[in-house]
Length: 232
Image (cartoon, rainbow, N blue to C red; front, side, top):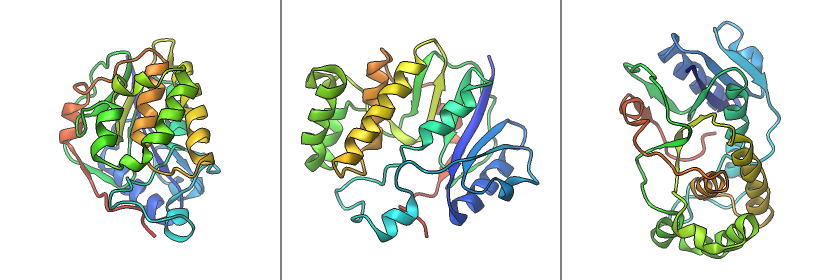
């Protein structure tokens, strides 16, 4: 099986960080979705021009209500396009947030089919919303009913910490991305710009996938995520 790393780098602060990230692991293939592919012309990466379909850091900093403080982290649903692009030529796409650094990357190995997420959060969507941003629950109930016809899926779909994800093709990835497309439009149309991990978990459930919280452990141990919210 073959694996490719990918990231989303929109606007200068994230393009700068993505350059550092890719330089940390030059021995693996990279796909970068970016508003300026020319910023990566000197690097051995596949840089793809991308016009955002959802809010980016600049929007969170200037147009949208603040994230954090119980409201949840900023959601970047456009990372699904980076995963899709990486899967065009590889069996597994590994998404890493651009504001991350890698040290001593281990061999990628073989990934189980479906979705793997960093084990930082290991709870179902309902459980996570009870303790983090419970104000979002009514919209997630609507979303679950829209996607599956039954809100009970919130109790079985796994929350996916969105800073590190891997999707491995098994023939059902089209259902996963179609559900994520629909869900992203659904929540954003209702003014919900956080809860990305719950959306991803519901999309996985729509594809018949159970989130794997073990497959990325070794890679996760080599990654340091800057975090801290949107960067200007």
